[in-house]
Length: 298
Image (tube, rainbow, N blue to C red; front, side, top):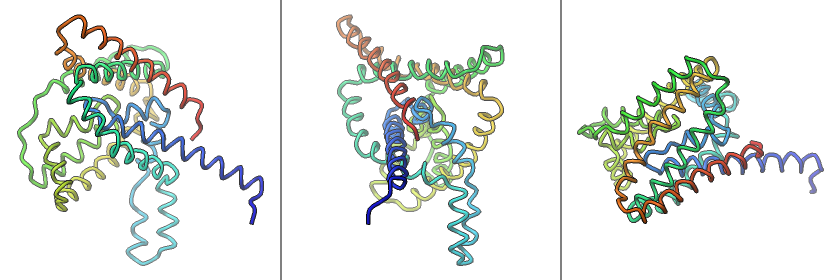
């Protein structure tokens, strides 16, 4: 049975939207595998950040009540009302694809070409901060103060030494809450948060060992953290957008301390020149990504 022109057009629109969000998810997942770079940054420069935050903040789990009563029809209806499946399915698919593939490449580059890799990250972050700065509607003292606060917070944050925390379930639960909130904030890396909390290597081991209790504690903490924090972010973006964007710019500039400190291991001038070129390359790649996604509907 052949599809009508209208049905074909609807399907093609859906497919374009699915691919566009999938690519955004892939970029977010790629960023999340980079120490010091946040998936929230990629969400912001590809134009999906506000929709993502708002969609997460809408989830209240009221759709679970009919499920306990065996009312599948009401469960399905409420789930569709609460959850933006058209966003989350391709986005999470893209993130998962990136984590499974790009993470190995990033790990190799950081191990053998750390200085040049972090030079590339520095260019990415700097360009992202500039693009977000352009989204701020006008200059004001409040925006300036907000940027300075964000900068100081991030600058001090990335200079912290890891906390010697234990690996009990309450600590893992809190780590999940904190890490997921960091992932949604442009400029703050969730992986870096886990490193600071002394949980990064332990949770990687828990995944390999398939330690059910540890994984469940982390996931529950992450779910509670991201839903609670996204509501706060959604409120700020809807009521104080310019100040929030200014704060995010400050965050991103402050986190430049991390790639800069990693680049400082380059001592010789011949090695410094390629690093600068790579940083410039990273800078312009962000502009290319922003330009391409500016014209891709989702």
